[in-house]
Image (cartoon, rainbow, N blue to C red; front, side, top):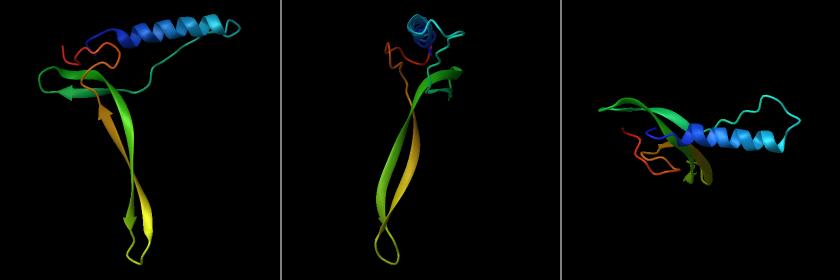
Length: 88
């Protein structure tokens, strides 16, 4: 990412989590949904990622239908928090 949103938000959430649960120890929050992406101009970058589940009913040969599911990764070109471009 071309910004510090992920570590900044993780730090803020960890601090708030520790405040809410003082009986715990070694609090840690890690945002999920990030992946490494490759770009032709800047090499490897960390990008926000999501997953979509696609579902449709397809006809069977013998009649009736069956549900077919697909999972698709979505890589974002901009930070979902501040809107800065992934590329430097």
